[in-house]
Amino acid sequence: MTEQLYLADSTVRGFEATVERALDDRVVLDRTHFYPTGGGQPNDTGTLRFDDGETTVTDVAKKDTVYHHVDGPVPAEGATVTGEIDWDRRYAHMRYHTAQHLLSAVLLEEFDAPTVGNQLYADRARLDASHPKFSETDLADVEARLNELVDDDLPVRHYTMDREVAEAELDTERTRIDLLPSSISELRIVEVGDESDPFDRTACAGTHVAGTDEVGEVTVTGRTTQGSETERVEFTLG
Image 1 (cartoon, rainbow, N blue to C red):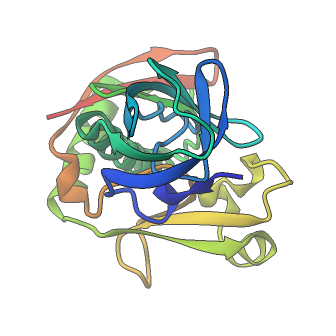
Image 2: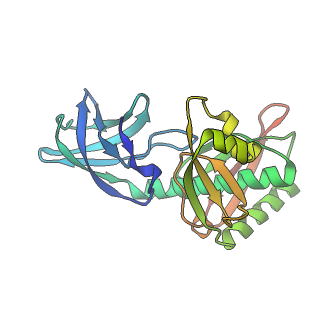
Image 3: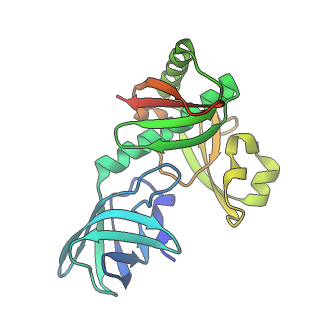
């Protein structure tokens, strides 16, 4: 199983690894900082360099292990490779994912509207919340609150926690532990805000910035109804 290094440190842009399996257009590494698609966050892209050349990583998927889809020569099994992340793309995802956590917390706090889905891109994001309908005034208030949280430069941190302990000690409505497969016994918890009383605490395996000031200005660009009890809120970052 590939060691998923991005879970411990999402700021690393380059790393060395060994090719464990070489397939037609995919490679499996013993360790990686490339983020695989999941949790509404798209995969990383970048390059793998090795003695015989260089190849482009176009997609990353996690199944039984992490597969790096490549466009170009495939390094041989046992080869040492140097991976380099497309940092602009990754950092955009980190900013948007952190902003999504803020938006989820604001909607739950102000409207009792839990998040039921989300999708991030490098230039925009959307979030689906369980709520009948947000007004234009609601959206303006949400945008103002989000930018207050950005200006407050709240710290963002993560840690691991045993699932049984988390279910016993944490607010499952906020952490959304119930949405995770029962096979996951150890959770990665992401917190935003003061350690003793965080503004948001969520079970999440995504990548995030270190403080909310890195998110930048948030603009809520609109809303659409996704059924009788679901609203989609869309936003961009400056």
